[in-house]
Amino acid sequence: MKIGAQLYTLREYCKTLDGFAETLKRVADIGYTTVQVSGTCKYAPEWLDGQLKANSLTCALTHYDGKRIADDTQSVIAEHDLFGCKYIGIGSMPGGVNENSLENFVRNYKDASKKIKNAGKLFCYHNHGKEFKKHEGKLYIERLAEEFADDEMGFTLDTYWINYAGYDACEWIERLKGRVPCLHLKDMAKKLFFRKMAPVGKGNMDFDRILSSAQKADSEYLLVEQDYCYGKNPFECLKTSYEWLKSRGLQ
Figure 1 (tube, one colour):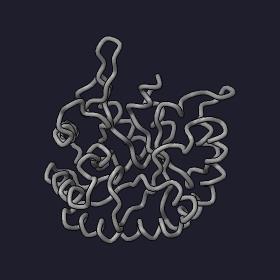
Figure 2 (tube, helix red, strand yellow):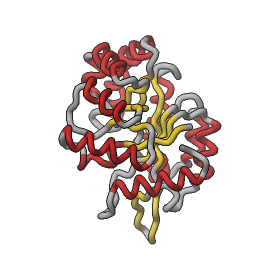
Figure 3 (cartoon, helix red, strand yellow):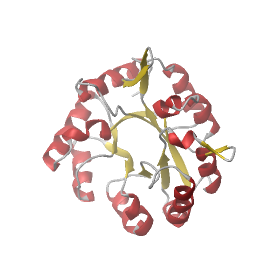
Figure 4 (cartoon, one colour):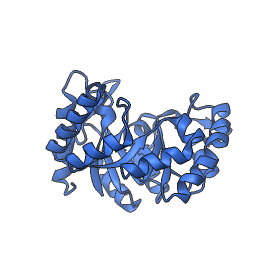
């Protein structure tokens, strides 16, 4: 398994191409060798390829424009080919998680997911907490897993949001074995009735157990993400997570 940085953590530094380029350099300086590209300014695929190579980085995953994935799939595939990315991701369900949105999601992305599969890549869905709501006795995430074949859609499971929804991240990582090539690592700190995001290893979640589950599930990339750093420097938060994971023998 390889640890990477989810650039959404650093979105405030990636609003321009110059800022994006500098951010990639700083991420590489921490020690990360792969990234997820999400929450950045617009960029040309060729530009991204050059910047990744200049910093000895790879792109493990994207969160791409959902409309383009559905309507212009072949171009999206070609763009990911240009910067060497296998996993094409979507960050959430358009329209929110509800019965109507689920039906639309299946209708809009089923064909795209098959095209992506045929190109040797994988469409990946990222959860928040709402996918763990039940409708007619079944969780939305269960229904998503049933609507798409294993090789048509993977899941970028988010450890924090699974925990936030009241479920066990390890259980779900192992339950979706083979469908979780990319995993979002995000810790949760608790104080009284309040919950907030924390660097990996600095919260209340059992990340040694999570790493074991990721290994069992054949996950390839462990992507560190911290949506909010509560006044702390996001680069320092990513560094703290990197150092904790490195202490566990990962790199």
